[in-house]
Image (cartoon, rainbow over the protein chains, first blue to last red):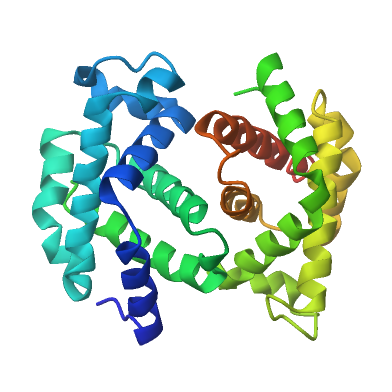
Amino acid sequence: MVEWTDKERAAISDIFSKLDYDEVGQKCLSRCLIVYPWTQRYFGAFGNLYNAEAIMNNPLIAKHGTTVLRGLERALNNMDDIKNTYAELSVLHSEKLHVDPDNFKLLSDCLTIVIAAKMGTTFTPEYQASFQKFLSVVVSALGKQYH
Amino acid sequence: MSLSAKEKVIVKDFFAKVSSRSDEIGAEALARLIVVYPQTKSYFAHWKDLSPNGAPVRKHGITVMGGVYEAVSKIDDLAGGLLTLSELHAFMLRVDPVNFKILSHCILVVLSMMFAEEFTPQIHVAVDKFLALLALALAEKYR
């Protein structure tokens, strides 16, 4: 069971309250595909990913970014049981999507960097610590059902 | 993975652009390292003050960032150019190389925070690659 302090819960809620899921989702996913190009392997059906401009303007990528953020919101709303909340999602990523779980960490690093850009100095070291703890719990839960 | 000629230019130009705030970048990155990854404090147990905004942490962040800038100037031969620094880290400091990766991440977060407009995905990938190659060069003499 993950223990969250009140400060951590407050920080994570505060961060999410400032996010436009469409904007941050699109920025985060497109950044991941540009910075770690091998992650593009999972998006063969998404159309033009030939260069950074194409990725950043791709509407399917943008839409999927929103989907990812909505998924993270589910973890936010169930912080005391992320593992079970994500059981189905974990099976989906393992059995259907066949995503190497190492990729979850890459995407979560990109999300941290996008949020840092958005929040500037209000993304304090303490906020970063809380948010990265949240993301590592999410990443662990997503990898739980792999076998 | 190696830096293309274009990426070397991107890295040199970007670091030149932000050089006036390099002290701030270094201090902030090291502060974040010890707050977000508390296990890294084990390397600084000899400091009286381990608070993120305290003088020792900020001063050392500046030192580390100086090393990053030295690496930028030697971007065409990182292993050769950083030989002395590698020997320092290998034989004296003996910092586990896994920490290079997490410090790199903290530097990227700080760059993104301080230079949101400029730190585009294209610049991000070039800088990330550079920091990874820097880490590799630093680990050159480890074994």
